[in-house]
Image 1 (cartoon, helix red, strand yellow):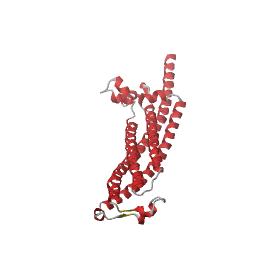
Image 2 (cartoon, rainbow, N blue to C red):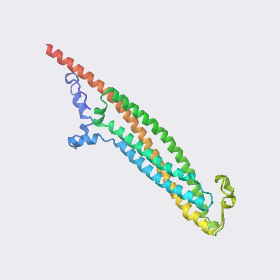
Image 3 (cartoon, rainbow, N blue to C red):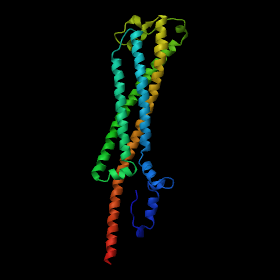
Image 4 (cartoon, helix red, strand yellow):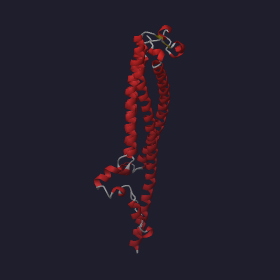
Length: 277
């Protein structure tokens, strides 16, 4: 943005200011029509959106598969079906829709507050107030979601640790000699409807199902889901930084708009005084 400063009083300040303006930085190696496209892209918000979409996609896919394996394990090995796990799978689809919609809305706000688009959209004071309020609302929503995903990360760390312990039990020499895997001392961790005799896995077929088909595959799924949660948390932190910057851009644009209007008034007064003499 180029602020028209008075040449006779400030010398070459107008040229110096325009030299470092947003458009002139790309004027040496880009065409005028390409400059408009380059300066209107919110690269930071776009990177955060890509991180969020990738993380949510990996999280939902791995968690859906991991929960499916867990439900089959409880039903086939411990004879204790858990119908609420199907509801949990539906929640993952709902979470994916919410995060996708939030990422697109924040990306839309980023486009509105970047480059020449900001100069056209936020000219009126009502538009600037609305833009600042929208940034604040999205910052609050993003902060709440960040707390949720940090809680989800802690839960996944606990689940992954429990599955790692189960896999170490499966890889022990006693299990390889077809001895029983006894979980009776951990009965408080199982659902109440699970019978005590089913917490002791002795049949070779049940041991194979528990170790090879369920625990090993589910562990990989939950490790990937935990990594995806870290990526989502990083993207939300990136969103908070971008929204704070967009809020500052809208506020600074208001000050620059007032400065430009003041300079126009001064130039008009100087022109009228010259014509008078």
